[in-house]
Figure 1 (cartoon, rainbow, N blue to C red):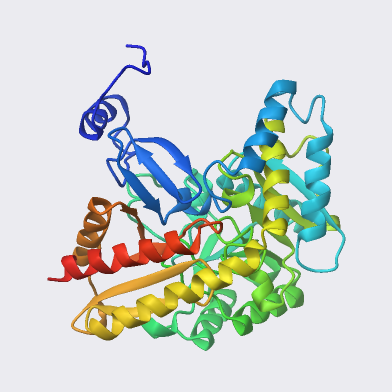
Figure 2 (cartoon, rainbow, N blue to C red):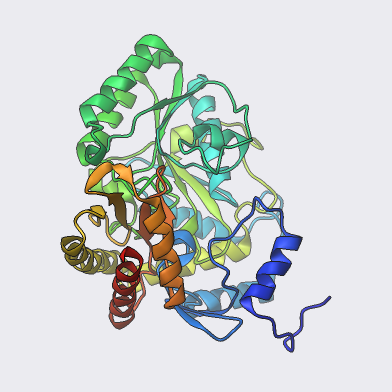
Length: 435
């Protein structure tokens, strides 16, 4: 059957068709079938309007269908859609690489490589680190999320649903606890565990890279402190280990800095970028210190769709919007508005809301518990809140290794009136679910 504009099906009917056509592993959070998006709003096939506090998982930082991004895409598609940057390249890819090299934190000379997805970017950081160091091992952190390919699942520190049934995973991957004071995991304890790895499992001279999310994404939106990031930087410097910052979810103004590692005054050796990079179009990158990036031989990096001209055009427009509309500053204000609202809600429900994380701009989380006990995750309440929110026209996401964290990722271009309306809808949804 060919879909035409005259086809009128409900969300439930489309969900039924999807369940028959899609592999069950590629599930969806909400049975909401979108027909239109504009800035922070979405409309479904039934004409319902929603406020989007998900932004496609921190992808549409510049909102849905930003006019500048749309114009850039239309212009590019009218010229050409693909030639392969490794065959006959184009100026937009060079311009984007130059801008990313300039914007990446730190004063070291930088170079860029392009791929299509965040998981590809992560895998390529490990390839580059191994080529540069001649070493084999990689250290990641509990709760970290780095992708769904076999290798990146080995790095990912969240089991269900990502890793279930998919092993075995590659060897030479080691993991340390991520410091989460709310759950009693101190920085000192995490660093001691890292040193225990060096003493018991792998010498630092065999470690090619340490990879960390400056703010954990799927793991629960826990931020790494400035002191912890700087301690890792020092360890990497002492042992010649490549320090990789996974900025796939935290990048492009999301946290109140262009990149989250800037909160720590740390210059990573390599940075992964994707998601918010191009306003919804598939493109990803690794940006890093030139001498490390040049370790692989010519032809050792790349991919057929790497640095898509359409993605490059969108990404250049996104960088312009971030600068012209002061989205770094807007992210800070968004975080403050969330903190004020959620703080008042916590006062009403101190036994259900355990922790609010809103210190990293517009990357905000609410951790739900039972009986005021941080060790009693309330995943049941989370599921109810999400359903209540959807019924009121609000899209929110979940995360956390305990499946008890609500995460908020609104477009950074959201109007304050829309943001306040969305917050009111969330309070109504939480109140209804908590009864």
